[in-house]
Length: 331
Image 1 (tube, helix red, strand yellow):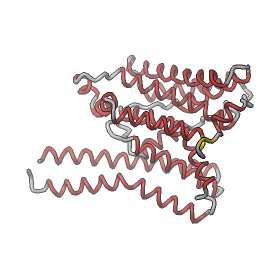
Image 2 (cartoon, helix red, strand yellow):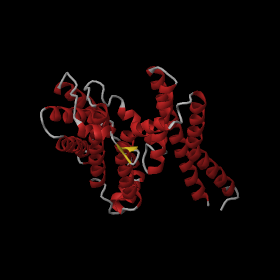
Image 3 (tube, one colour):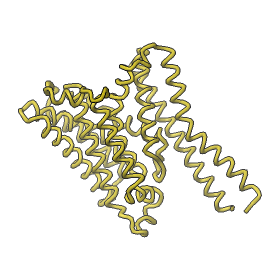
């Protein structure tokens, strides 16, 4: 062992702590600022609004976290959400009960996700190119379905989107269930541990017997299904599904939340707890800006700053990982 190794290890630990707590410190500081600027921020009603607004983001961020840990990405989730919401709305308006209509929305999302996964995993196409193409294709298909937003979905959808259970909005409970399922998969199931191996070194994982095609395909399917569920929840909350605007830019919000939570875009690193923190951070940021009457342009600017911050934290974490590797080789 070289004499410099302990010093380098100290620097590595320090950087790890900085990366881990930077988002928490930023979140606390931001919350304090909003609380001082507006008396409505910490009210029970506003906190419920933040939770409800963040629910759909968390639903999609959970499987997206698994996908990004594998070193993959799905940039079509906003358009999947949109086409699912519009499809569900049109089916309900044409007489189909809301439960089977919602089921169709989730299945449609899953089918699109499976298609994305097939192109990426079995035909080895670029995940960025494939999902960007699907983003545009699905948005066009959504606009083709109808020019007029379907609306008035009835009491069942109203309960799903705006109802309360044990004093919390129903979408929040759905998001909690999805988060628990994702955490169970990632931390308890053997397949969840394999996702880290795929993201770290796909070839080595394959040689070790990991199913390097089946697991990413499953993750793409789950991400599509979650986006379809998100479309159902958005349509239920709004009691409408405008094809031109629903889900617009949603893919960037999901990716920002995931990266803010410490999930490495290059794969191999990340946690569900971190993704949850990223979702809450974005939810509080957007809510606080609305309360301060910041323009939509200012809100977009702030979200962009958050994405750049996420990229910076990701790079710091990557450099820290390289430093640890150097230290281990020197030891």
